[in-house]
Length: 319
Ligand code: SF4
Image (cartoon, rainbow, N blue to C red; front, side, top):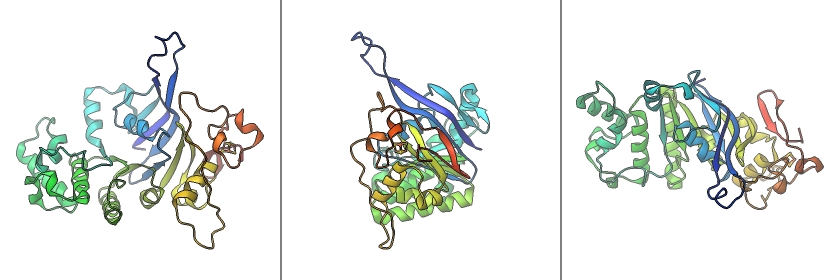
C-alpha cells in the first residue's frame, strides 16, 4: 500500500465552551476512518458536504495532525517522520483542488506556478525546473510555450490542466483529487476525467478522489468509500457498490444522483433533513434519524463495521 489510514481521528475543540464554564466539547470531523490506496488504484471517497471528506483530505496532505490513529506512507507512520521524510512525502503526495480559478495565483506565470513545488529542492537548477515544467505541460496536453503565459489567458479546463501539471512536476506517486471537476462546465468534465485516467495508466499513479459527484467518482474510482458524519458506512469495489449498495445511506445517495433506467426496480429515495452536527452526533447509528430502513435497535446500538460479503464492508444492523 502506498497510503494507509488506520483508525484515523480528527477532533476540533469547540471554542468558548470552557470560558462559558461548560465541559470541553469536540467536533468529531473524522472519527475512526481506515482506508488504503495502492499503486495505480483510485479510491473514491463520497458523501454529502459535512461528512468529513475535507478534513480527511487535510490529514492526507499533512495540513492537519490527527487526534488519534495513524497515517502510513510506504509502510512508515507519518508521525515518526523527520524533516527529510516530510519533504519526500510532500514531493510524493500532491493535490488537485476543485477551483482552478482561485487555486492558481493570477500574478504568476505558468512557469512559476507549475515549477513552484520544485524550488525548495537542493541541487535543482533553473534549467532543470524549466525542462520539467515543459514536460509536465506536455503530459497534460498543453503546449510547451504555455509556460510564459498567465492563468487568465486560459479557459477553465486548461487551468485545471495547469493545476494537474503542477501536481505532476515532482513525479509523485499519489495525487489527492478534491472535487477535481465540480467547478468545470459539464462539457469539459469528461475531458479532464479522461486525462486523469490516461495519466494514471501512463505513470502508475494512485489517486484518492474526494467527491460529492457520484457519477464522476464512478468514472475514475476502482474502490469506493462512503462517509457519513465523520465515519465510513460502506466500502467495496466501485461497480459492486453502485450495482448493489449495502448501506441505506449509499442507496439514498445513488438514487438521488444517478439516472434510473426505466426498467430499474430501484426506487428514488428522498434523504430527509441535514447531516447531523458532528459535535453531538445521534446515538446508535448516526444515520438513524434519516434512514428509510430504520430498525428498533438503530437509535441505541451502534452498528459494527463488518465484512458483509467478500471485499464488501458496511456498518448497518440490516447486515
Ligand atoms: Fe438504517 Fe439502522 Fe442500518 Fe443505520 S443501522 S443505516 S439506521 S438500518
